[in-house]
Length: 314
Image 1 (cartoon, rainbow, N blue to C red):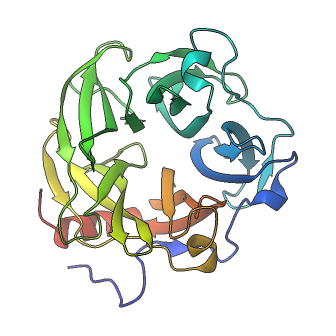
Image 2 (cartoon, one colour; image 1 turned 120 degrees about the vertical axis):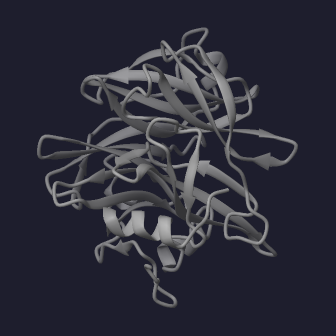
């Protein structure tokens, strides 16, 4: 059984964190956070959420050869749409992208924000510099959408977080074409008395392992000074991902450093993706305090073992 040392996290923070902050941006903005990673060949790409000085969010792109030292493209790569019908739902910004490669095509789920609420939007890209919007794939009041990196039983699979009656749970849905979704059901709900008792949401696109689909997710606990965002994991059945095999009882990454505790929104570690390296180490990219982008690493097997052995389904 994997036991975490008292006061320590399973994920190890890179000593040079944060990898990107306001000072690294080549254009004026308020802050940068919540970047989704992909690795193409030997190059790492991070699609970043940037909050502009106007107050709304858009996307920028950063590149790296080692996954730690990034250079940001000189201009934003995706702005809220100006043309209808897209601008009806993006006029207050686009947020929190999550990228997945399915059958050789890169898809990005992101949150479209307007006075009508939050909706999950779908785009595709070949180079992360130009994006084709494909559609809005949720009703209002939904965010934290991630796609499985392959079809399961011939169907695309999505996790998301619709919000109703004050409860935010992770749901699972299925589609034949990525645009029309159904057979939705609750997958993971907040757990009273745990670190994720207030709200949960998908973070990284699920990772296939021998033990099941590994979903790294975020959970919040409400305190007298506000919510604390932490990172945990669950394992889902490979053939029936609506079946939860295991769920960690303890968080794998918690806000502990100054850059995670102090910022636009304090006490936040919020992952939007991970890269599994050839040596099976995992680079987890996360937003810290809604103010910077950071990276932490762990062995894939250690994450799986902790989820399996320190948890029970539900």
